[in-house]
Image (cartoon, rainbow, N blue to C red; front, side, top):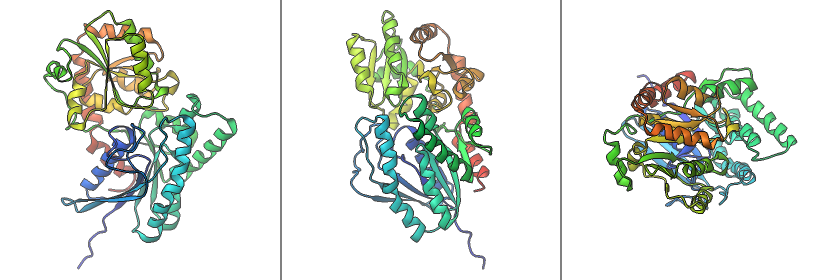
Length: 419
């Protein structure tokens, strides 16, 4: 009698994981859930959910390790989650975030050693950057137990820290680049989320870099026919023109430009600005809006998942705001969901960046210069009486063709030899 084939196993090392509602944690959770639904056992070594609130979310506490096991009866797969206590700054400055990254090593070292000594072998080890140095833990595991390491880059952390002046010091950056170069050379696979970031990583090291984009759940996020009526659920009028920013609210994102645009357009009663989310800079944005006496800016918390599709459909225009020096160092994760709901966006992006190319080449929105408040206000005003239906249809078509999770994940598994 033939022995049944061993179920393949995947280990994820990352700061962030489900049930975090946005960012890297959201994508990590969806990725590992997809693996289990398709018959792979998964293990995750992570922290307790804290992002984007910067405090641990109930019912979790942050005082000791916690293990969770989720079974998938339809496929027989199992997800095992090891959560590690971690320092979480109340106001995450650049230095405090570096301290958090460094303290993750002693926190996660025991679970990793436990897997080296006592647990079954994992076939694929996925480590998510940022923080980039977690790949060294995957190398430690590989040295003793084998398996292949995929180093997946969501943000180019070191360049972002340098260009946005989050940290400074030439010697420090030389050391960080040296460690990063070692990781890029020694990983079995390196992947990242946009064509522009693939190009940047290839500029660091002469090797293949896989294109592994963030996806959208196109069955959960989709266009609604009654968009005007949906606005009433959040106490807006059907003819209000909603400009929505939904996501993390950080100091280095340039979101004060939304407040300035609201000042410039305060004379047009129909235009309303909605800022939804949480983060260390939200209180400052509220202060700026109140100081200016703005009645056309509304602040909302992060929306529950069951309401999020309708909330996104409420928007006439979605705002994707980033600093001009961000370039191709990051690819805004919110873009995928905006496209899935057939949303039209106004995005600040430099010519030639991945964000610029996606929006311009596929006619799914409008690209303007970063840090130009007058141009942002002008673009919004121009959209007020413009027919946006073609852009909305293009956005949904792009999501169905390029961002479908099944297509993205199957391509990735084939690229890393896990089919």
